Amino acid sequence: MSEVNRRGFLSRAWKFGVSAMAAAGAWTSWDALRPRLPAGFGSRIKTVAPEAVPENTVIEVPQARAYLTKIDGQVVALSEVCSHLGCRVPYCDSSGQFECPCHGSVFNRAGDFLSGPAPRGMDMYATEIVDGVVEINTEEFLTGAPPGTETIIEPPKGPSCTESSHG
Image (cartoon, rainbow, N blue to C red; front, side, top):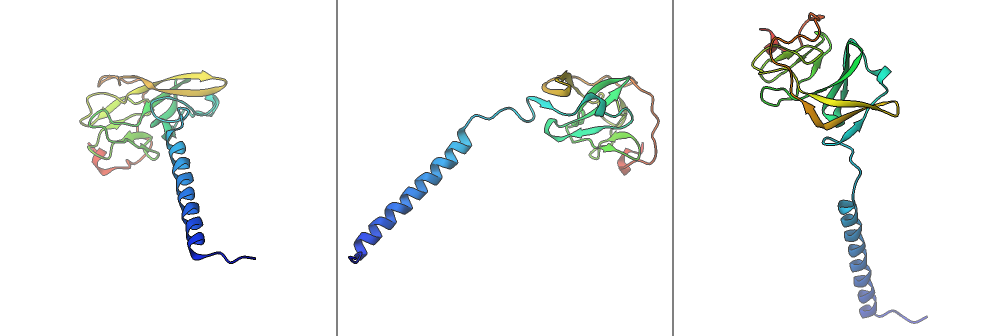
């Protein structure tokens, strides 16, 4: 068995190292550049079966930045963005309303404006039942209804989740 000289060993080690870095770079580039299927905001989002959408509360769909609920038996997808200044509007389980923590706008479960500085109700996304599943089309939205529109009449179920929404 012949001894490997120092120069030969270092030469092979360098070649191996450069090859490993090139392979890692190619792998990373392919992962970053390969085409991906639409699976987030700005596309069609598959959610749940229509019968799984509640009539007295909402389901949050983070991928669509939306909430699903039923109004008069119809599935509705509401944008989670406040029509005032674009804050995320969470649903308050205790009051049964959407309450904006930024400036205090309040919307009912149908997205109708109830109070606060918002200029209109919550915007909605188009929905469609495809293969037994509700799809939210986040590229197509309808502007929220003007103040004074009441699609449903549901008084608060209980206490508010935000102090700024009193008033």
